[in-house]
Image 1 (cartoon, rainbow, N blue to C red):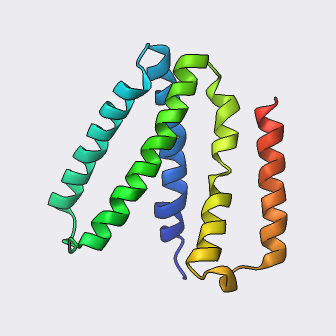
Image 2: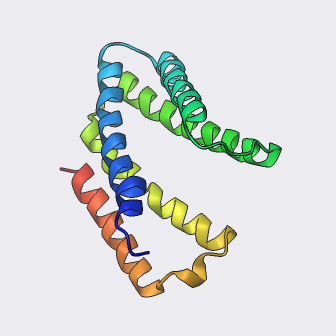
Length: 145
């Protein structure tokens, strides 16, 4: 991969948008929107974005397998997002305390990718262990600040 664009498009920009998303999620909780209403509004916005992408992007096939995986990903995301919203709304926890813990999601993705998608051979184990320890240490340090 010679270009930096895939990293910017698939890594940097999503990180920025997800960081902004957490701020608006907290503001929604502060404005007394419970997790159910938050998920409805959030899901509607996602559906509209998907519709726009489908109408303006390059066509892709709709397969039952692909739709099943997408729906499962959406359900997992909805449960996680709903729990975050519930914690923000019910307990008033600062988003800055929760966000570092959410960042550990990369460890879950990495483990599942390595174990179930056969990507373990593509990973440098020493760097993986060092990175995992740094991520966990950073999350603990920042969330306890």
